[in-house]
Image (cartoon, rainbow, N blue to C red; front, side, top):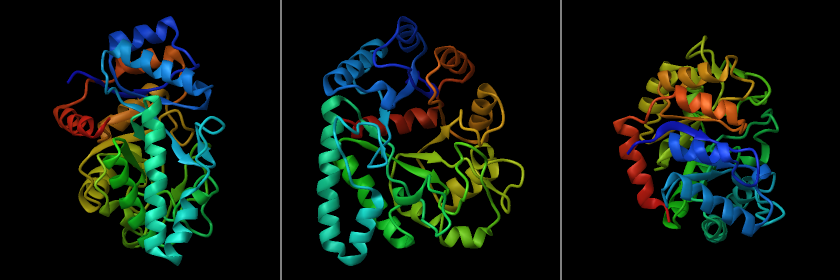
Length: 314
């Protein structure tokens, strides 16, 4: 399987000539869509069809952040109005009823995505909510209760897979204890490994997701120099060993301000630390070309895991 170790993005609602060339010649691992790429159901269907045509891959990974409510790229076209925290509150009141309602919601969500050709959703958010958590997580988290987050996270992954959509657990190893938005600045966490292991790391241990997205956070008691995305210590000792994640690890967006280097350096440092894929969300065509030419083809491990993901995809 010959794919570059990057998930790219595009600027508009149709492919430009340069974007068509990029997709046909450079073979990115996948492509993520945003609100800027979406106008109508028919338009998005045609865009996805074109993307898959130029990469010559019917199951080419098309990703989206469709968490619901505040993070919904399809809002106004297909409305998914419920936030994770809503189901978390229901689950604490009545597990049986909440589970049934949530599974039904996920089935509808997955069917809506499949209908327009999207096959990977970057849910669930497994960050454990804290009282001082920055609003960037907020109600995107299921709960302040780590067991509720764990249980609903497992249900999310299982139901997505059953309905032909691959899930992406995020933001590993945990974004819930931050008070700073990593889109704007690098968050720094001073909690001990023991505290993090019993709370923030905990929900990530119990899912069977094939994909996970990193948190751009500095965990100073584990690695005082590098954010988790750049940290061999965190990826190898925490994410791979202590948490036990065995799937494809992708970075969060390498254009976020929590990362202090240029895009190519950010990509190389992410891959060198142990990420299998890098994510680039800004859609600039020049940067897309520079990045895709600078990153390697996926390794044997990532190719094997990609084949496993393709078996899930509709």
